[in-house]
Image (cartoon, rainbow over all chains, first blue to last red; front, side, top):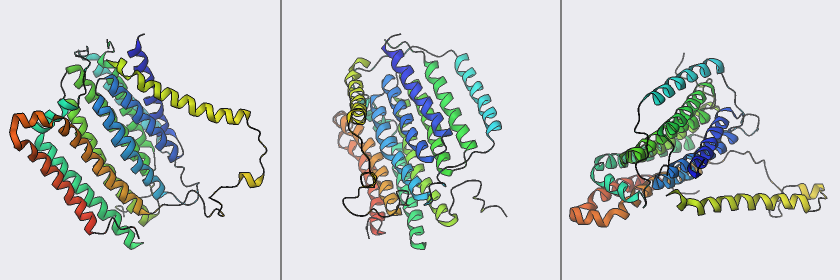
Length: 168
Length: 102
Length: 122
């Protein structure tokens, strides 16, 4: 049991436990806040995998951006009475059976395949250099397309959200 | 040295994905369904980063960038749609939103 | 190596332990004589108005959405910035072009929201 094992099991436990809370919590606020710990655990695993820049981006985009947006969504859609913020579930047994089957098949595939199962090299300097180079040379067209996608998302979301304000 | 086999990360990612699918199937609130979609995207990202660093190539991490960008765009538009539906129907429970049915 | 990250773990551990210790010690050692005046909500001397679970305005959502789009812009600009010197050596001044196109496209979205009055706070 060296430091890598300890860190891996710690972050894996944080991630899985808080993912369970996201799905099972009756109160949406609890779901949203335990999603924070899931994102945090994933960022820790990225660090363990040597992807330091991705870990920082995970914290910036998911914890700092998407989670805040989800919390705004929760606060914009709850009723004034706090009873309504609790929500129900439906068709639990068939859903769990189906996903258990799917997870079983996935794990069978993952364990049955002969992966190159030794980590290449833990990077000694930040991965931002390699990412910047590959982003601006090999994947430059996708990079521009993502800019257009963000533009469309910005215009679309602003239009949808604003029209409703005028109506109310 | 890092001796954790890649299978561990993949199994963790499979479990997270299963938890996310379960949440999408069983929860009624559209925002919780949304959070579960983020869980599934994150499990995919984890698998991509694991493959990338065990292969010693940065391409997988670039894909994680792209997935994150799409997730952010999806969060902005999707939550705007959920809020718009809430303004009209005063509910975000997906079993009560049936305006396409007649 | 992962040993580089030990200071970060130490900071996380210290902050968690310290904050919990402060709250727990004030709970354990402080005298507790609650009355209705002390337990009431403190709102800077005013009488508290309304509940905590009120719906917030859609304007905050627009600001959060703008923030997330430009957050994404930052994560793309940063790796470009640290690698720019090398790209400039390889490709010359044309290394600037993709990033300028990207920034212009995003600024178009900003201008749209600005012209539509999405940034007005009335």
